[in-house]
Structure formats: C-alpha cells, structure tokens
Length: 312
Image (cartoon, rainbow, N blue to C red):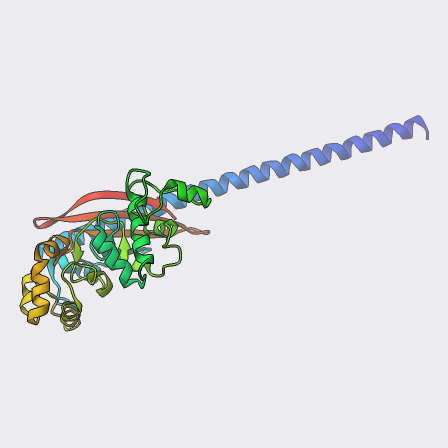
C-alpha cells in the first residue's frame, strides 16, 4: 500500500472512532437526561399526591367539625354523632372521585394485641379456631414476644428458640404491625389474625367490632353475644352494658354482672378514637401517598392526637 493510501486508511479509522465516541457520549447524555427527567417527574408526582392527600384530609376535617356540631341524625345502623362519624362524613363529603379516597376505622374494632390481657388474647385465639394445648402455647409465645425480657414462659418462646430455628427474634416490645403476628411461634398458619387483632389502642366498640371480637370480652357468653347481634341487625345497637344485662336471662345476666367492672373497662359504646386515612394516587407509574390521623373526641370537635404519612 502506498504511503498516501495508508494515511487515508488511518484517517478513516480515526474518523470512525471519533463517530463511535460521539455516539457513545450522546447516548450517555440521553440516558442521564432521561433519568433526570424521570426523577423530576417522580418528585412532581410525589408532591402532587402529597398535597392532594393532605387537601382531602383537611376538607374531611372540616366535614367532621360540621358533623359534630349538627343535630344527631341516626344512620341505618341506628348510630349518630361521634359513633356514626364515618357514615355522616362520607355521606356529606364531595371528595369521592376527586383523586383521593377516605377511609374511617374506629379504634376498638379489633383487639389491641399490645395491651390486651392473657384472658382476652386466649379468647380471641379460641374464636380463631386455635384449640388447646396449641392455644396456651401460642398465648405464651405472644406474651413473650411483646415483653421486654428474654426469659421464656413455661409454654412460650424467646430469642434462643427463634435463633435455634433460624427465625426472626422477638421484638421484646410493642408489636408494630398486626402482620408481625405471623412471625410468632404457633401463629404462622392461623387464618384471620388481622380480622381479630390490631395495634391501635382503644376499648372494644360494641357498635363497630365484629361478633368474633366482642365474644372475647369478659362476661360475654353466647346469649349476650346473640342479643348484641340482634340489636345491631335491627338498627338498635346496645346503649350500654347495663341495658344489655337487663335483657338477658338470669343465668347469663349473673355471668355478665360478675364481670361487670372488667367489661366496662374493656368496652365502650362510642369509639375512643377514629383512624382516618386519605389516600391519593397520581402519575404513571402510580405514586400513592397516604395521610393518616388519629382523632379523639374533644367536646364538639375532633382533636388530632397523631398524624403520619407514607408512600406506597
């Protein structure tokens, strides 16, 4: 090959390498720009969802204030005022369909697994179909999981047992989420745990809790449970425990009266609090933000005792 032709070959090769480098640089810049645009879009969607959820919650709080000041109007369940806060607010609000969703859950609709005593926990496990001796073992395991020490109860399990079986150890403190119960020895395959247990503190709300939850209350036998169910079905919920006792046969009334103080401490007619969630979803792919308030009754208004939010 002549020197002149050889120089042309080298020049062509150099040009090709420059073109490859420029194409690679352009691709890199394009990818960086795309990621930056996607990140900015995600931040924008997150901000929009957060503001939308917060805005819906503030509108709901305004409706709640109005509902508590308005004359009580009974709903189909026979409830009014604070006890019917969910129905009255959702009936009055125009938020549905505006991009967010409101949910109301009364505290006391489930048994607070962190504060319930051994009797209520055992009764709830019996309701879920856990039979002895598995029930006694599961009960001790729950108590060991939530207590602060590593000393196992006679039928329980502490950190050593979980380590030997290559499983997550006990929290040794309050259970953070009801799904955590499935990690406790003896509860791994028990169905319906979330339908009976929760982690929100509050006395059992007689007008809102399921029959399975109410059956775990002290002094409530089959007749008392049946009477509560009948009254709720007819739109005439139980006014108080004294009223319930007056409607029972002597034997059932005697059992309830014997546990009257325990029952009144563990139950209530109106919920101790409401857990209100506002959930908003925007963007593609979806970005969902949840804003949650725990509201308690403070005279003619609802006081916020806890606020938290998270991203789904």
